Image 1 (tube, rainbow, N blue to C red):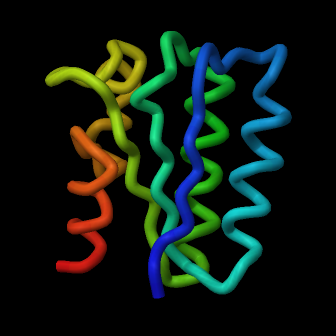
Image 2 (image 1 turned 60 degrees about the horizontal axis):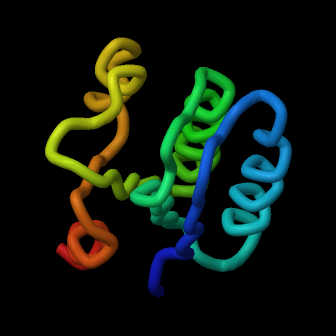
Length: 104
């Protein structure tokens, strides 16, 4: 089964993270256990967005799945490195690479 894909754009902050949580919950409530979150068009993400991603990852793991993040650029945003998220979640440079990671 193909992973669900959630594409996110713009800024992810405390003021709009409820929408991201809703979209992640909806994606994980389907039949797929795996989720690709495409953040390549996100210009800024704060700690509330990071928390939403970690919660989604935990939910996916509880179902026997995983979450992969697609990030633009060679280096993940500093908030990911500072919090160690780059070691907790699978980070990919493109949606295709993330999907290939699940296929492997």
